[in-house]
Amino acid sequence: MQVTLSQAAYEKILEYIITGKYKPGSPLREEELANMLKMSRTPIREALARLEKEGIIAKNGKFYIVTSLTETDIVQLYEIRINLEPHIAKLAAIRATQDEIEKMLEILDEIKNSLNSDPLVLANLNGNLHSAIAEASHNKYAAGILENIRLKLKIVRVTLYVSFQRRNEEIREHESIVMAIKDRNPDLAYELMKEHEENVLDYVKKNIIPLIFK
Image 1 (cartoon, rainbow, N blue to C red):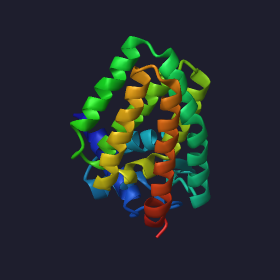
Image 2 (image 1 turned 30 degrees about the vertical axis):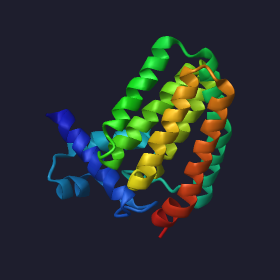
Image 3 (image 1 turned 90 degrees about the vertical axis):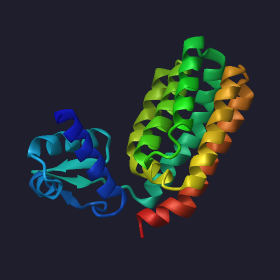
Image 4 (image 1 turned 180 degrees about the horizontal axis):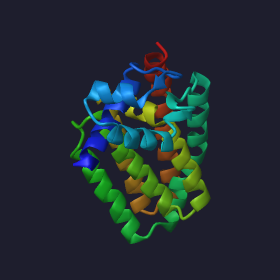
């Protein structure tokens, strides 16, 4: 039961951050959140610790604050992804084991079956797919860098899946990338991943940044 409460607290606090109830720089206090969510402080504390680990909030004395990513920070983080993710996909097409490819296909099926789920679920599943591709590249340093970037961009990534149009585009783009990896076509995997990341950044600039910083 405690795990369920902790997860519920995590999802609700993340929702507050995404919807702007708690903006960048806003303080998050255990007691206040416990009263709002009608929970004890233990699941709140666990949820805040998880959000801190993911880089969404940061400790500031006796309380936490929402991490202040600027518009420039977001764009620059995506610019790194645009340059690194295609190389990772190319390496995965060359180095992935059959088990790793099967794992990608399983995650892809799970995403397809979850298209009507809430944005947090979809963001996590799509993050799992990118992580599986990174693992299949067998370059632990590049995979580690991308994992860190994904955590920093979690608020942006969750907000991305508020749009049902972008959900459908994401699944089409991801499926084509996984098929290129499965077919051992490194050049195509590179080009498709590059196009995907460019599309995401374009969408973020036009639709998400204005929403977050309104």
